Each structure stands twice: as structure tokens, then as C-alpha cells.
Image (cartoon, rainbow, N blue to C red; front, side, top):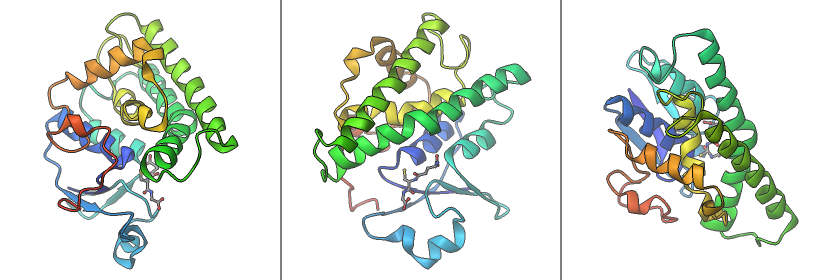
Length: 219
Ligand SMILES: N[C@@H](CCC(=O)N[C@@H](CS)C(=O)NCC(=O)O)C(=O)O
């Protein structure tokens, strides 16, 4: 398998995190959005959706979309439950992540943390901040519902929903969101980081999880 990613992609981080938690070696080809790699013919020939993450399987099959890749990697493991009802609950939270959680948090991080090309007080950023806070309220309420030590879609074993929701929650402060207002989420993030096989955004350097720098060394 080969993962096409970028250093700071939260969606690709989900895939590397999943592989680490499953103990799967996952070679990566790290592209640079800033350098225009995702617009190059070579990448477009591989990636039908023109975004990372893309996972190329050993037989040449190509998987796009973080949610689909997590689903594929987790087959046969405890990270994807066996019973249809439990599977449906995981799908609920994957859908929530894509529709209501990732977008506002990613936009805030991109414009206020990485590019710094918007004012926090702009109508656009205030709108994203309001949506991000609403999503975090929902996530915290769900974690409270699952009880102490519970996970997003179950009170037992974590699932791919926890993996999907982790990166953009973890990086929320780059977009001006102070997570101390959601203590149950802070506790959940720490519990994910304590799992065997946890992968930081920059491998082996969890202190760089909030870095805004794209290091030329690894790109
Ligand atoms: N829904 C997709 C979103 C993928 C996505 O937004 N990828 C970003 C990086 S995090 C990307 O490739 N951006 C470059 C572009 O769209 O040109 C997923 O979950 O994988």
C-alpha cells in the first residue's frame, strides 16, 4: 500500500493514525499543496477526486476519501464493529464529522492558523466558529452519553469514528477555538493519544501537532 498525503492534511492524518493503531506499516508519498503538487498531471492521473488522502493498494486499486479508507483498513479489526446496528452508529458519527465538524474546524485552521488570510472577526470566520462550537457541543454531549472512558460510537472499544473525529478536534486551537471549554473532549483526546500505535501529525513529534510549518525536509 502507498498513501498519498501532505504533511499537514488532517484528513490524511486520520489514515496514518488508523494504520498506526492497527500496527500496519504504511509508506507515504508526501505532496505539497503550496508547491502545486495536487494540480500536477501525475497526481490527477492517480486521484479521481484530486484531493488527499489517496490510498493505492498493492493490486493498483485506488481509494479516496478518508472515511472510505478508514473503513477499508479497519475491516476484520475491533475498530469496525461486527453488528449492523453498531456499524450504523459508527456511520452516523462519520457522517457528522464530514458534514458538520471537519468543514468549519478545517476552514478556521486554514485561514486563521495556516494562511492567516482572514480576520477572526470577519462574518465568514464568525460563521465557521459558531458551527465549530456547535459541533464540539454535540461531540461532548455524545462522549458524556457514553460515560467515563467511553468512545464516540460505543462505550467499549474505540472505532473509526474516533479516528475520524480526532485530527480536526485536536487542531481546533489553531483556528482560535479554546478546547478547555469542552473538558470531556480534552479527556477523550488524551485517551486517544495514549493508545498503542498512536501517530502524531509529524511522526514521532507530538509536540508539533499544532505546527503551522510545512517542513521542506519531508515534503
Ligand atoms: N472529504 C475528504 C476531504 C479531503 C480534503 O479536503 N483534502 C484536502 C487536504 S486535508 C485537500 O486535498 N486539499 C487540496 C485541494 O482540495 O486542492 C476526505 O475526508 O478525505
